[in-house]
Image (cartoon, rainbow, N blue to C red):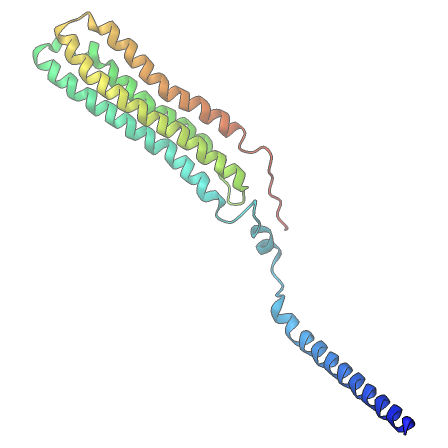
Length: 213
């Protein structure tokens, strides 16, 4: 009787072993069948572009920095020129002899656009299709620095120029004070230009993208 029980246990173990081997063979065949579908082979250029530091959309930020530099400074220059021009036109009706002397606010407003042009050209020279995200973020920051600073300076120059030329027509002693205020308003745009140049100089440092041929 014990011998028969042992024989039954041995047969049961053999059955479990056979089932385990059969199950393992089925799993192996299944993995080998689906492995080409789950792990596709990508081209070297696709793998290189699909990185966190060098994504395909990185140049967009550099282009936006280049655009921001020239657009915002031109907004400020246009507002300053228009606002000061209105004051000069109103003043010239009564004092046409002071038109050339009081044209200074218009000139200073136009200089702001040059700040944006310089930074925009520098950023555009560094734009590349394959570039690091760090580089393009720095270029975006440089463009916004000079652009928004120039926009603020243009608003200040326009308002000061409008009121200044009207007051100078009635009281010539206000001319020196108007020029000093215009200088301090112009310096705001210069601050943005300096920061933008410093940032753009460091745009290519730190991260370099290497791509497979």
